[in-house]
Length: 150
Image 1 (cartoon, rainbow, N blue to C red):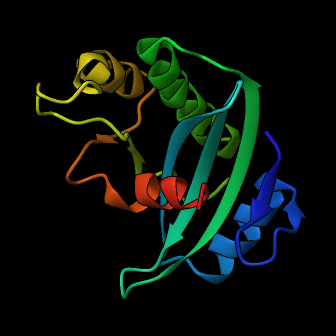
Image 2 (image 1 turned 60 degrees about the horizontal axis):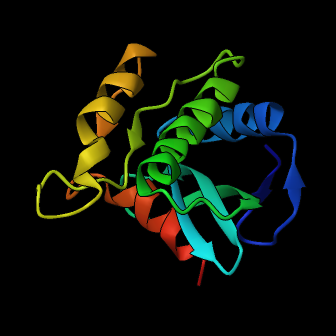
Image 3 (image 1 turned 30 degrees about the vertical axis):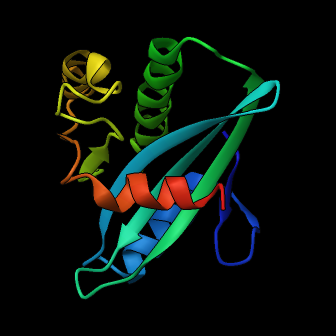
């Protein structure tokens, strides 16, 4: 995964960048999330790492990956979960503050199609030692990931 700063689209070396940022701003929390959209013949995934300041606002790094279109909803949503865990794992090599939450863009209401992945996704995330959040509590990283497409 190649990460860029949202502010200026500049590519960053994730681990040293996160280490330096958190050394300067130890009060920030880390949230990771991924969203996807089918666009034409491709599926585009946007993974974000949000350095969130509890007073509001934050600093965002993102990675976009384009793959051939994934028509199957389960497969597309599951890949979102895997990519979020992968991004969180990339940060494990640092000697700093761990990821606070992986925000999953999944709905606990069974009326919504993303619900089909929810239980498996939460179990998967937690099996790696991360805390998972889902709608409506998973707004930070999942909303920022969604905004990458605009």
